[in-house]
Image (cartoon, rainbow, N blue to C red; front, side):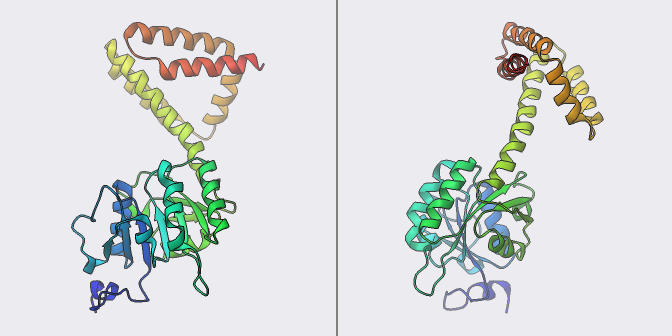
Length: 283
C-alpha cells in the first residue's frame, strides 16, 4: 500500500493509524508545516479564510480543505492554530463544540503556535480548561521557511507532552518546558526583545551611515564587533550600560539629533537615550 492509500482509503475515510491534524491558518508558516505533516504520514484538515486549498496537494495525498475553523477541527486528534495572535482566541471560541470532550471521547488537544503575548496564551488555557480542552502554548524559535516542521519549538502548558509526542513522531523538533501556557511565549518574546531590537538598531544605523556615505565602513565595523562576541559579552554590556548610563544617555541624545538632521527617524537611537536616562535616574 502506498503512502496516499495509507492516509486515505478508497472510501475516502481516514485510516486509524494516520494522525488527523487540523491546521488553522495556511499562510507561509502554516502551509509549510502542513506539507511536512502530510509528507510524514499525517492527514491534515486545514482552514484559512483567504486560502481554499493547499497548493498542489489533493485529498488523496492527505489534505482536506474545510469551510471553517470548527469544520477543520472536527475529528482531529490535534489542532495547530497558526493563524494570527489577534485571531487566536476567536479561533478557539468558534471551535469549542468541535473539540470539547463528549462522553467517552476525549477532547482534542489544542496547540497555539501564534506569536502572542503570554497573557493571550493564558487566556487560551483558561478558556480550554473551562471546556475540558487541553491547550498547549507552542513557540517557534526560528523562521519556518527552510525548516518547516523541523523549526525548533518550545511547548508548555496542558497537553504539551501529548503535542510533543505527536509532532516528534512526525519529525518535529520540539522541547517540552515544565510550566504553564505562557512560558514558551515568554521565552520567545524575551529573545525577540534582544534579537529584533538589535536588528532594528543595526538597520537604523546602516540607514544613517548610507546618508553620509559610510555604509560600507559601518557594515564592516558591525560585522567585526559581532564576530568578537563571546560568553563574556552580555555581562560586559549590562555592567557597562549601567555604570556609564549618564554619559551614554547624552551620547545617544546627540546621535538622535544627528539622525534627525540626516532625515532618518531616530526611533532606536531615541529609545536608547530614554533607557540610559532611566537607568541614570535609578542610580
